[in-house]
Length: 398
Image 1 (cartoon, rainbow, N blue to C red):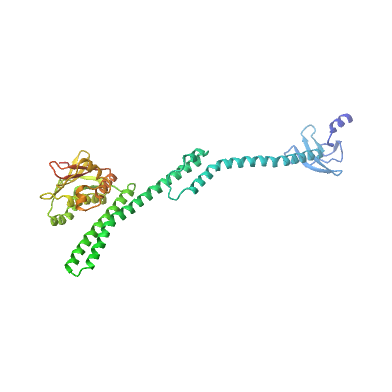
Image 2 (image 1 turned 90 degrees about the horizontal axis):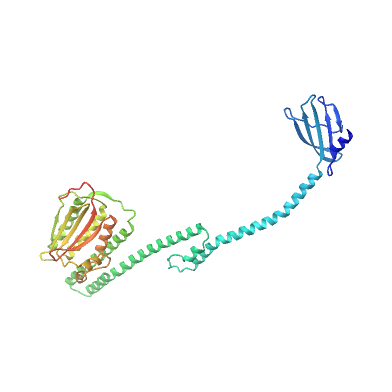
């Protein structure tokens, strides 16, 4: 079969060898110097490398189970495959730098596009005046192509708003304290200078008493300002609990009785014999009653002067009211007195207080879910300041 063997060996690029061996390893046909490779037990073929006449060959040994069994060995040079592999490596090596350049350029453009809003945001913050805490320009949010950048802008706006609110509260508190303490401090300084210029002990005593009164008014103003600032900041962390309001009112009234007796005021109470429970904060409730009683003691100057504290239940609310027979207020002034620094003509005339007490009361009531109501006394004159608070069951009504 020389012709068939030549056809089997024909290859335009490579040289092919083959050999056939019998079951006992006896050479049957082909190239007798082409030895078979080692085929593992249980396997039908095996690949291996072979060197022949200085050439690198790739050999395959195929074991065929027949009758009888035989082994076919074929080997082929690898020059063309090596040449193709080298060409593939060269062409891929040339293409990869261009691909890297294209990919890098695309990435740079994408990163620059995504970071452009951040750069604009940085420039806007750098150029901003330190005192300017307003929101960022809307154009920055429109330029942001990424939702992450937009959320960052919203977070910065929220932070600026909180910082602005905090700074506004601090400036307002500092300005209020400076404004309200200016007058009493000037009076104290003038009284002290007048006392130092006198030799009469009676004058010294009179001026010292005036200084003491001025100091008390200044201390009271500072306490009220601090209380209002705490109320403005404590709404989120306020702890409320169920408590008997009638017991708390009775304890506060007992502390005010000596002061009322010294001033010749009739301080009475109604409805404290019944249990009235509310959800509230003891410190805030005491602050409310302290401010209302203090206002009534200073402005309730009827003939005879009289103050009545009443506690009752109306529907789902517990109503704590403090009524005096002083000059009273009209409807427009009653609405204005809930704001800080607001005073009626009587307060300005008497020169007492700073117009903070009722604003503190309104804020305390709001923190506990209640409200402040100011009504004239019928028949007048006088003012009724009432605090409406949610009542807690069970409550004994009357």
